[in-house]
Image 1 (cartoon, helix red, strand yellow):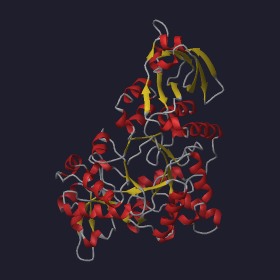
Image 2 (cartoon, rainbow, N blue to C red; image 1 turned 120 degrees about the horizontal axis):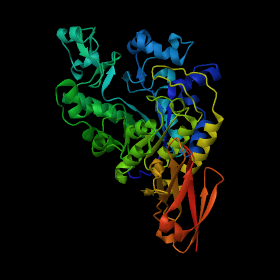
Image 3 (cartoon, rainbow, N blue to C red; image 1 turned 90 degrees about the vertical axis):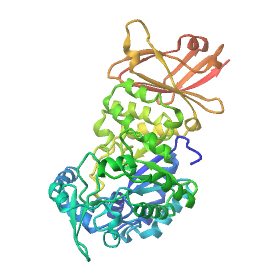
Image 4 (cartoon, rainbow, N blue to C red; image 1 turned 45 degrees about the vertical axis):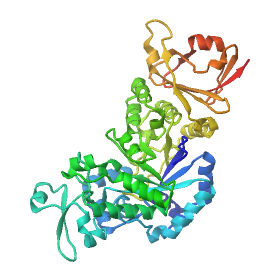
Length: 493
């Protein structure tokens, strides 16, 4: 993509939202029933992308596995104490076809939704699941060679990783989809990337998707890397992603790729054509609640960081309001969304929802919104809409001891932005459960011989300082536990 300027993405759990709309309408809702007013609201909040999770066709085989799996049902019951079988549609990642089912409105409704987003200058992102297909995907009958096969011995030794599939022609033993560290996902079958025909078929699916949306979030994208696939299955395929990305972009020039990726393989996938890669490392460090590892993570090159998808929650992770104390939640959000990268938000995050919804479910728990969190995100999103937050002029700042033997400077995370028009911004967070003090060095030599007014955009605080003193020692900060400033600097000669 040509313009990676700190975009905003909003993830929607499509099937859960449509279930809620159905209850309001008194009939089954489709993609056409998603209100224009809600799309208007997302546009007004500043979103560039909307990711609609789980719009593709899934099958009865996956649904049966989801309903029968005892371990999964325990999780579903925790989400929905009044759980019914109808709430369990099966995983949105056990796909039988990259087409929209009739009960969601079909491909035509998806095209209309994409058009409605485009009128509001927003783009549509959908799922692409490269690693596996559903148990009842048509390829099981027509192209079983696309899947990793097994033997009677493997099935007996690893029943958690293999299944006997009954077909019209004959029975086969095939592998469940999985990663190298866990047992297989029993509602899926593993695609064999060492087979060039499989790769070509998946590129064909991707080319089809590229005509239906503006970008894809690629599920567990690192599993298709040759070294990872070889580690899992003992066979090394040819590289898939460079060809897949190129072919999709031959069809749609600016088609966007976002990778769900772990194990420090973010840079690898960026080099193979991905526009954005998950930043799970930052998320994990924020959950550990220590500033220094977060600061060290932000030392990476800008061109790498701007391609990281920064988040506090998504459909795989627990709700931010469930794992972060409210003060820590707000401090972490200021850090995550004020640094370079794709700013990735999840439906329910703004309301402070605490109950995660599995992708197997089509109904969520009833929850009351947290008014304080809603108000905070309203303020933060207003700041993210400012042109300065789309700038490429970002810099992490150095903090020094406020006085001898005071080590609390190590609790600060601080950085600055500069807009092409000259506007300056300073972000500082005391990411610690105690008050902290420091001097933060400012990268604005032009404030010499000037008076500097610093106005906090998240509070009523305002400070007047001498530019000369700021350049000499830095800005003195004395901040309470988990507190933060987003300061606009106004300079007067």
